Image (cartoon, rainbow, N blue to C red; front, top):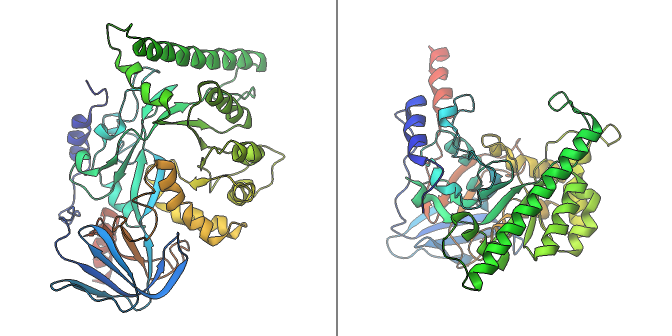
Length: 432
């Protein structure tokens, strides 16, 4: 298969545009010996908070959790004296590693030129050496679900771990979901789209029909292949086979309640495994989402009201409303660089009514469930990946959070980054 996203050009140009500093973090080698985290406060997510507890990491996995554990011969003991240990945070639905400098088109490998690209795979354009990644990682984020952008069928997302030499090393799970940029449903004019309401309504209807026609064409191909009637393969529709079988989820990027209901209708028609991404109005249809067991990746934890008659805290209070309705949800920040503030968005939701454990789950275990990797990530459990983060305070509170250590698959990760280098550099200037 020919990959449409050119990762090589991005790697070369990004390296030229933003040369790494001499202290640029180097990906850690595979775990060699056992590591015992001693006397910590473990936020397991799946089993509550365990105080004065030890966690043992062996061969990249969590081998034991309990009190008074001993490290195997040759192992390393890390004394934590009650510091907080969390599973590595998971940032969903962003384009970290796909763009380096937004103003430099040559470093932006997020878009394909056509609007029907279900075969495009985001991970092949992922730049594991991006200078942005360490700045995100240093806030406790160990994984990122990256997706290609576009105007309709955007392509497939992949879950990447954030300490790697290449996209191959970074890929945790490829082809997580097919991402659909849902057609607009609003008829309100704006400076960016000054058409009259009736013109907007007509355009919206045409765009939605185009989506339905595309899905019908893809389904016809899949059915024809099952019947043995396909002679020439089409890579686009080949990528739709796992979508119609339910093996690959559909992530519909939909904000308006009308868009969300349209996405549910399409999912019902083809029996698709649906997740809503964005979901600004998800609180308005929370009961419908819960009844159909449709998860939400809520992307506006810092959002402002979209309508004149909405309360100023609408976005902040939405996570609590989704939790009350029984919707499975995760929190996300779509901006690739601003995803570093994911934990603080979860903490803010706590201030507006969300239970603290639910907030932590929204950036760990729930995110892992939505990405289909909760059997190995998202909580501190024996047998899961030894991906843990140590914070001196509450990781959801920017006032006390201070990430001091991180391990990904048992590998000690360098938490330095370009911003810290620059901070140290200019501290020296003013200390003279």
